[in-house]
Length: 252
Image (cartoon, helix red, strand yellow):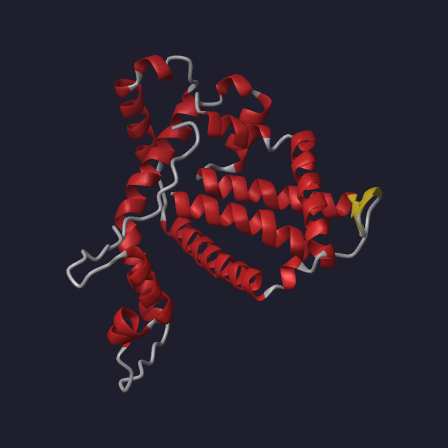
């Protein structure tokens, strides 16, 4: 969850803002920040992408986000959820966009984005975010929830959380039931989709190259890290959990 949220947020917050410089200056001019003319079209493009990002990060359909924007009293008692919904309000969203553009102009003036280390970081962020977004979209296409599933999960939520669900309408309960059912199905389909994608891409290994030996013993930076960190031959190897990056549905 941390990886998906953080990576996509960085991608949109940094990559999109840098990329938007290349957009044509169409629409009315709102203001000029540094050498960048901020037009209504430029901001609307950013705002549309921001809402799309929020929908994906929250694993919530846009209608749910719109309802919470109009009825803030229904936002879950979670500071992050409230901040996310508040960030969708145009006034708040523009201030964030404006602040980033100011910082971007300062960075561009110094040629910050052209530094090799910064380029490498942006490339890494792009790669990880693209893979996450692609995987998530493919997963969403596989997950189909029936009306019966929604109703069943709705009843389960009402049974398990009577106080929280007491003020929810049937429509809201069904939406929450749908999100809960999607999360369960996600856990089942996640390993299957990973396997399908891997099988769809041709991989040709170099049999003359010992990858394991390279990664363990010949990667210079890692060897320096081991010396600095005080690793020994008996140091325990850290392995990832390989758990899917589940994103709780908002309102769940």
